Length: 388
Ligand SMILES: Nc1ncnc2c1ncn2[C@@H]1O[C@H](COP(=O)(O)OP(=O)(O)O)[C@@H](O)[C@H]1O
Ligand SMILES: [Mg+2]
Image (cartoon, rainbow, N blue to C red; front, side, top):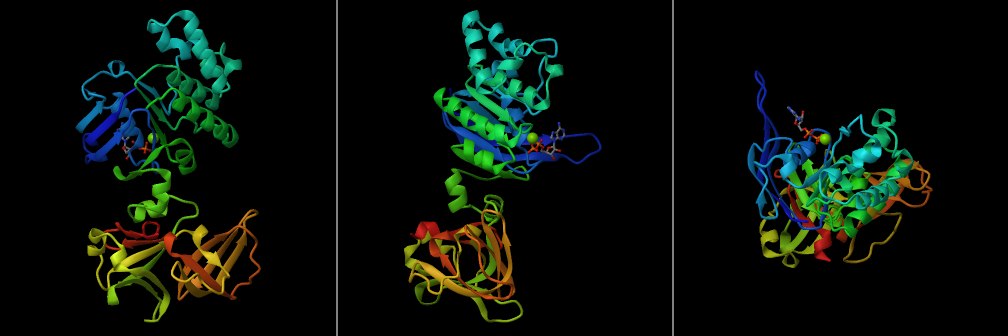
C-alpha cells in the first residue's frame, strides 16, 4: 500500500481541427496510505480521465503523479502495480470467469491453491460464485461488471482504482455489496479511489470525497465536512438531497454584530433577517473577508429548518414568518414550500404537516445550520457550525 499524490495534474485532449479540450485542470490531491476516497461529479467532469492517467491508460498532459516515492508519469500500466476496474469491463471472452479473475495472479508467482482460495473469497463477496465456470459473453452486464471488480480486488496491488464499479447493478444488491466492499478494503488496508456520480454511494464508501466540476476540484473533504462546511456555492448546491436553500442577501456589520438580511422582492423590507452574533467570534482572517453591504447567499438545508414554532431559542435560532406555498407528503416525509417576501424556502420535516396553501407559517432557523457565501466569488465566508 502507498499514498497517492497528484500535483498540478491536467489532461488536455487534442484532436485535429478542434479546440483543445482541457478535461482535467491543475488537480492537486493527496490520498493517504490505506485511505478510501471517491471522485464525485456529474458526467463529463473529468473523473474517468483522472483515473486513467493514474492507471497509465492516458498520458499525463501536465503535472506529476506519485505512488509512494515513485513517479508514475512515464511508467507503463503494468509497471505501476495499480489495479483498475473499468467502466467498460474489458474481460477476456475466451476465458472462464474463474480464469478472468485469476489471470493477474496466474501470471505472478502466487501458488495455485492460494489463487483458488482468493478467487473463491472475492467471488463469494460479490455473489458470483455460481458463474465461475461461465464465459463472459453469456453474462448480463451486472455480472460482467462484478467479474471486472473481482479481478481488480483479488490482486495485491499498491492502489485500487474503481470506475463506477456498480453502475449496472440493482439498487438493493448495490447497497449490500457497497458495505462488503468497504469492509474488504478496510480489512486489507487498500488505498482506493472510486469514481461515482452517485453521492449516496460516495458517502457510504469513502473517508473523503473529491467533488469535481468542469475538470476542477471543488473540495476534497470528509462527507461530514462537505455537508457542514461546503467550500463554495457549487458544493453547497451539489451535496445533499434535496439541495440546500440559497437566498440572496446583504451583510450588515453595524455595532460589531454580523447580520444577513434577505430583502423582499420589489421592496426594501426585510423578508428574513438573521443575527449571527458578534463579529469577534469569528477568526480574524474570516472577519476581514466581510464588509458592509456585501452581496451574499444565505444557505440552509431543507432538513434543518424547524416549522411551526412560535418562538425561537434565543441566541441559537433565528425566527421568520412566511406563507405556505406548497405541501407535499412524500410517503415518509413532507416537502413544504414557504414563501418569504417572494423567495421560496424548501423545508423537509419527518411528519405530515397539517397546513393549507396560503396559511401563515412560523420558521426557526438554527444558526449552527446557516451558511454565508460571497455572491461574486462564490466562496464560503461563514459556516454556522463553526460558530457553535
Ligand atoms: N479519449 C478522449 N478523447 C477526447 N476527449 C475525451 C476523451 N475521453 C474523455 N474526453 C472528454 O473529456 C471530458 C471528461 O470526460 P471523462 O473524464 O470521461 O468524464 P467523467 O468520467 O467524469 O464522465 C469530457 O468532455 C469528454 O468528452
Ligand atoms: Mg466516467
